[in-house]
Amino acid sequence: MLAICGGPHYLGAVLGRWLWLMTTALVLLAARPASAQHEGQDAASDAPASDAPASDDSAMVERFEQAQQLYREGRFAEAVDVLRELIAVKPEPVLYYNLARAYDGDGKLAEAIDAYRRFLELSPEVEDRGAIEKRIETLQGQLDERERAARESNKPAPPPPADKSTPVVPWILTAVGAATLIVGAVLGGMSLSAGAAADDATVHADAAEAQTNAEDFALGANINFVAGGALAAAGAIWLIVDATASPSEQVGARMSLRF
Image (cartoon, rainbow, N blue to C red):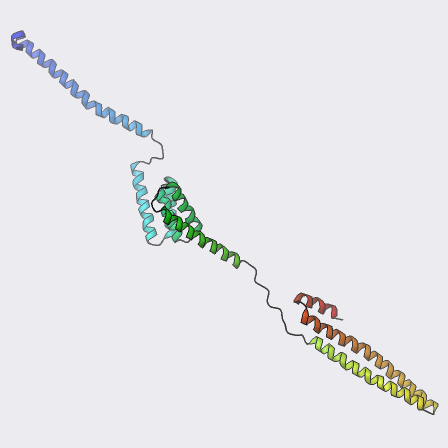
């Protein structure tokens, strides 16, 4: 039909134009995906900084696995350090849970409680919430007991028991006082005897000598009575104070009884 309408030259022109249009369409279709890909890269560059790139995510996974290995080896403090680094970059709930487990294993009860509670805040719908809350309750009880024991250990030691033994000095004072009183009584008796002899003497010189002796004996008796009475009274009071008073009162009483 084309050959009838225009001949061979016309058919060649139509085919050439048709090939040009097809080539142009193919070029445009090939260029469109490249343009769309470039636009997607521009949009990704405007994403928030908290969306870490793929290389950073793989590094975090590696550090996460390192923390798990440290925990399995019982190196809880080192696991805590790694997990805290990860949380500073991306505070995921699972990191807080593992942090709580590491603190728990390391005996850091208060820190473990805080990490467990933070995990529950970030994961309110977690299935084993009841078990975690029970663990928090257990750790809180252990922490309270530990703090109570620490307070008890910081209390001052009770004073040593008071010495209940009776001192020797008051007994000596009492004995010396009693002996002195006995001496005074003897001298008093001798004074009476000398006075009676003075009364019965017929010679003046003998009477005078007997009277002098009676007076000397009487003076000695009075001195012994006073001294013996004082010593005996001091010893008796000391013994009574030691038997009834507290240790501090005993010290004060002993000081007051010293001459």
